[in-house]
Image (cartoon, rainbow, N blue to C red; front, side, top):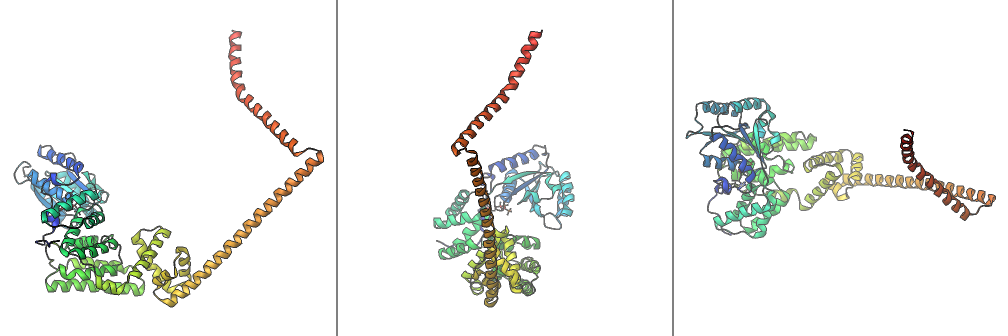
Length: 500
Ligand SMILES: Nc1ncnc2c1ncn2[C@@H]1O[C@H](COP(=O)(O)OP(=O)(O)OP(=O)(O)O)[C@@H](O)[C@H]1O
């Protein structure tokens, strides 16, 4: 496997230049073309804004730039989380009054992350859409999170997640262009893990190619566990916007202290000026202080501030290196703080919490921390959780982190088990006794009945026969009842007729 020639991010290097090169979004592209052509034919569409909605890395931004190139627009890219967005849009919308849509320098306004628009600004932006004389295209991951005022004014175009096959094809095309090869099973792994996000897949491919095959296996092994941490950190290190940085790590199923280790490990590759690196580390150390305090006091509300410091605090620390940033797993630190055994214990406890308490993974991780506090301070309640979650002794030891305390809780849980067992067997006894009484009663009744028959000189067979006959008579009666009304009706009409 050859080393790549430069560190230009491949997602940029291989971004499709033309609409026709965009993979597997034909339906969406048809709508986009029809909408822009309506503008160009001097007949602006009813919905003056277009909202491209879909998962990350499916081609939304690519569509806008390819569209602009093909139809001759200049793209004015604005970010919804920028405080001055409204002001900027207004400037362009006003300018559009005097701008000839068919002229050479026509502009297309691109509002990225429109699911991030503050509710206060949404009404104003909606008004600008009404006034707009040039196309406004917005993009969002979830269209339902775009403020309603804006959503109602936009034509929604949905982008689908790309299939594993689409992703494989795109990766192979890049490898051919780079003149490098990667074993097929690794390509398949990358395509599988990308979960429909071609950007993530291309970034992984570049990571793998730049690090060599052995490294690739290791990185991919981590990806198994840390599904999206690579993606999240790539986003975090690509922005100097505090809000975007905070959003980048949402959905990473990791404890904040682990996330801190990942950021810590990768910081020196992101900033190059010593003073920027120092500032970023200062933000990290503050995050660490909050985390320590949360652990000591049990006030997990502090996690939020810690996460803000390690994301937003780091993102605004200075000027970042341009180009592709390779993300490294924090191997050494991780090995020191959490062994493989501990990790698997944590995973099994989290799984039990998820299934017994009907929780998503993130929620379960938070609950695990609450359980840790309970296990440390309240062994009686802890014992009930042990029974409820069906925890093993090792899992209890992992949660409480202290052998003696674990023993006490485990002992108490055994007592609860014993009590429950006793209660259950007591209940069983009750049920058994009740059934027996009912059976005795029934057999007593049967004996009584037999005695009566004997007294009257009727044999069992004769009784059965008599019962069968009675049943037959009953049936006959019923059949007659059903037929009768019909006959009656007929007779009545005939009778009437004769009367006439
Ligand atoms: N459908 C596609 N066809 C070809 N390349 C694609 C496609 N989707 C994504 N890519 C590749 O992935 C990269 C990222 O795509 P793009 O920026 O268009 O994603 P996006 O949908 O705008 O994501 P986000 O919501 O995160 O902004 C592009 O540079 C391109 O290389």
